[in-house]
Length: 315
Image 1: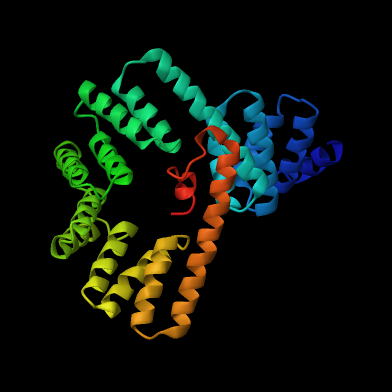
Image 2: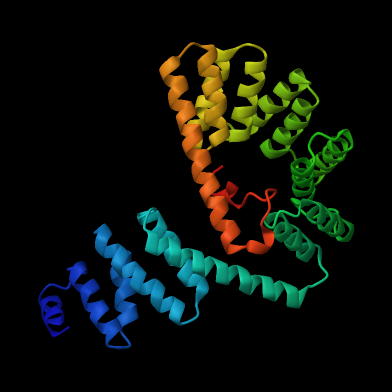
């Protein structure tokens, strides 16, 4: 600490030295340590040292019980080093604690609210209980039929639970139409309407819905894949490939997109490309299966095949 202070006295512009001094101050419990560390972190450009200082700060915020500041710092650190296992572990712990804290606060402030019912529904979906989740979404809508996002989430739950039943498709369509009235049109809603049309073998309507979704959001992977699938059905593999290539570029870990692209490549007699896409599909699926197994080990009470907790990580 004394050596760093001596250097800074002569060259106060040396931010790396200030950063290292702040580490000494923090570990000695000196009051200026955190302020110096925050000042250094804001100006540091060296990635390795920025990660070290940022981690020190995140630990300090965490020890102080300031989860919001901790989460904000960890978000920055994940951006700096997305594959750092220690930072990811720290972030997962903090995000979980934040989620539990906000859940408890919501349960105390408004236990019978539409938002509470919505949250229960989301928890049930994570546990694989889609039928009960749909019931809680309906309870939430009884309390507040104009709550943004609810109609869409209920429609998605219905389609996930029993997509091939005509009555389910009709219910989901009604919810999606209600979602448009409440939230306005969106690519997500149009994609779900496109999926219903696909389930009913109405390729023309499905293509129109997916194309409209693509117009609303060209980066929507469901829209890209939907257009590709319909074009493949219409025996237009070259056009289908264009949209499916967009999908795998947008989300490289989307197993379904790689599989569909491999089918189109086979139609186009692109042997090497077909083999590559099929291998990627198999590799990603294997990874997802491993993740599902880990989730079942962490949540043995939900062990079943309905839930897919890995879907958020690997679309």
